[in-house]
Image (cartoon, rainbow, N blue to C red; front, top):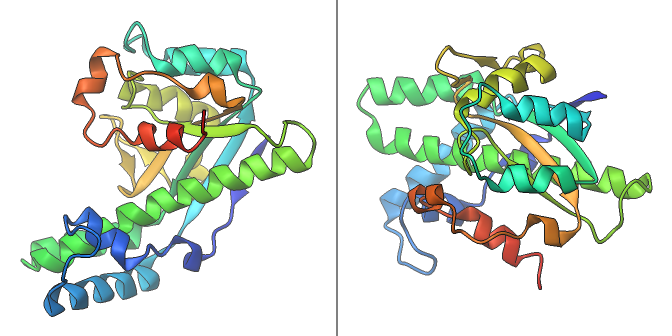
Length: 236
């Protein structure tokens, strides 16, 4: 079953300190007044321009196996390939903060307003991640409320282009989920439009199925290794 997600824009506005952290300013650092003003302006612009939309669709392990195979370009060994057969529930997702935000970012770069463009770009990226977090939490809560999974279950998102899942996997994901219905399209190079969009699969199950060591060859190419924080949050 596919479900259109609705977002409250207030839930997607990132904390200023998170935007500044992503700009390279560590917590507790003295923030120049000009930088603080830029962050505030970027947050105001984002709130005005944000047009969030999301879509989620349940599917079976066998259905996802076909989607995950994509064009046969995945790495031979990947965390996703190990985890999804063990999941109790799976759902594809796609969500965006909308085209107007990306258009404004491009306009600011075109008019050489690089500082504000960069700050707005960071704000939109943080907000897109918040949309993902909000969506996975809502999906898990729905499953727990319905009695479909244990309250001790955990959920994690995985996306084409990461963890050995080749970016070309977007093609079959889009064919199944049809996010064009909420205004998200796919280019020939597998990039999404609007640019500030995310897609992938949510896998729900016991904490232990999600835990893996970063010993895969492609782990060395990962910059932020965000999976580490999410796995640590599950506890021992």
